Image (cartoon, rainbow, N blue to C red; front, top):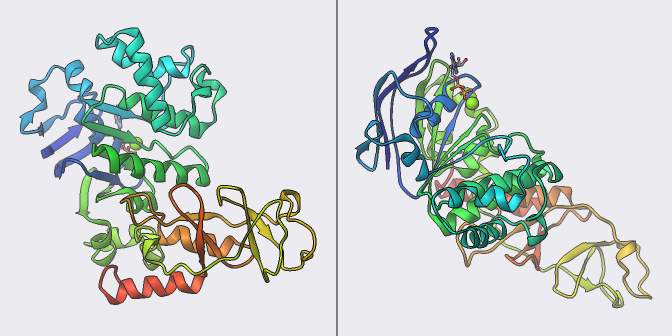
Length: 371
Ligand SMILES: Nc1ncnc2c1ncn2[C@@H]1O[C@H](COP(=O)(O)OP(=O)(O)O)[C@@H](O)[C@H]1O
Ligand SMILES: [Mg+2]
């Protein structure tokens, strides 16, 4: 648990970046600090690992004032991830991740073994280990940044706008991955962003900051949408909050209907309308258009692409996509049907936009989200 008690930071030039902040960050949760640029999010985050010292108040980590901890020792238990990953350019990906364990006395062999495991955990296969950071995409670099922050297995993870510099599709993927990791790792995560959608998607609790470093509201995402504390929060959360609610309702509750599939290499047969072409593992490859001839086999070249996928997996927590993913999937599909897949990526069925909206309406009726 991390407790901010009347924490203030005034920089030497007189700027009050954080003003008497009281907040408790719970263990094993993702707590998001969100707010417009310059409202003191980074300053608040960096005070937790003593990169910045407060000018007033105290921060307690598990009940102990962090001023009593030696900064390097304190940081060993606190991973830190920043926007451009901050990787060492002249070290390979594997060595980047192995750096911290090596520093703390792990043998070279064990450090590398651990690093390879972590790379796999964040979704990078072994082929990336020998590359240098410049040879990776922005999204891949961020994955390495997360793996490196996890290398010392710290109970606390601080993340400062880690996904802000990557494009929206990759960002969505990284967010999904973080939720998946967290469902396995149960870290205490403090995540900074200026993006309210990201905050609502990732946060168990969300702290909205206003300029001047003051806390405007600290609540669960649904409470924030349902009962904004004041004008500032309500304008920051925005008018389209009904749409935002789609972001934190999981797609697992949407009734998934049957979807015609055909394996590539096999005859299309008697399927009618839009049909999903799948590979041997039942993973979708694209759509077979209704005009495609009935005779002949379905080939991977002739498929109509388009339509994102969304995950429905009610068996494990944290892996399902959001209702928003489901709606995006339906709206972006040439067949107007979103493709639901399981954890392995195999087709489960299809869903139309009206089914998604009906699920949202139902959640509103049951009081799960604001109307
Ligand atoms: N080293 C510094 N010296 C003076 N002012 C600073 C310094 N770092 C940040 N600030 C100011 O403190 C305020 C909060 O900054 P910051 O914590 O970086 O905000 P955010 O991360 O929310 O964008 C801003 O007004 C910023 O200009
Ligand atoms: Mg910042």
